[in-house]
Length: 245
Ligand code: SF4
Ligand code: SF4
Ligand code: FES
Image 1: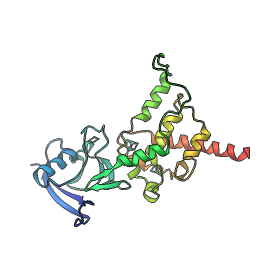
Image 2 (image 1 turned 90 degrees about the vertical axis):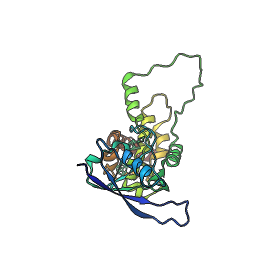
Image 3 (image 1 turned 180 degrees about the horizontal axis):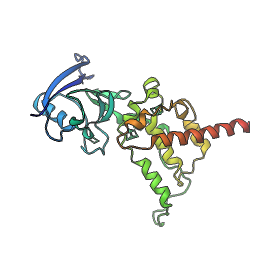
Image 4 (image 1 turned 180 degrees about the vertical axis):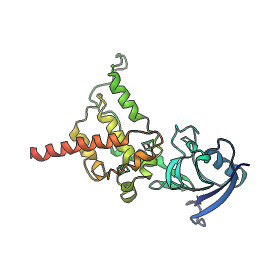
């Protein structure tokens, strides 16, 4: 006999003047290999078509289905109900603008952070479409690819104490992105240039280092290593600036 799962789901539609934030209960029979993504779709199809949540790929690739699952940020499509108790509480990710119910606008947040950190290759070279592609050392390419695996789900930022307290903190995902450009030999920015962007409390010096970000990252990015790497680099840059005065 399969379990009857009790879902407590946050409901609120900011676009509806009469809507008030509240929790709503739904009961659903568990099926084999059920994920939260499947459960939410069944609730929407069978019980309440107005339930809002995001998804696209169903495979942990698009990063759209992040939500707080029994108190912990995670991906709905990657979470099996069999790994949870029979009572499941779902809340939208904090930090991001609420669209409605479990749906939040991570896209605008990431666009703003990537603009702030100038998240693109800075080079003075002129692009020549006829030139042969420049080779990159294999190890360097693998190291960059490792950091490029971020799916921008926003879970690391939602779990971050600093991001919850300070809305201008750029968060682990953006710091990971800075580290990705810092190790890219095509990017001609100097450590001083990076210091101007992240050498402050909104950047690496605001990080408390408790690593909730790495704990919840569904792609298991090495965030701890990147935060340590940036803290060392920016710490040394800061000392050089002091002693050059
Ligand atoms: S280690 Fe830093 S970035 Fe990660 S959750 Fe803690 S404060 Fe946030
Ligand atoms: S670093 Fe991990 S948790 Fe953070 S946005 Fe990227 S994939 Fe999601
Ligand atoms: S639906 Fe794409 S990551 Fe979950």
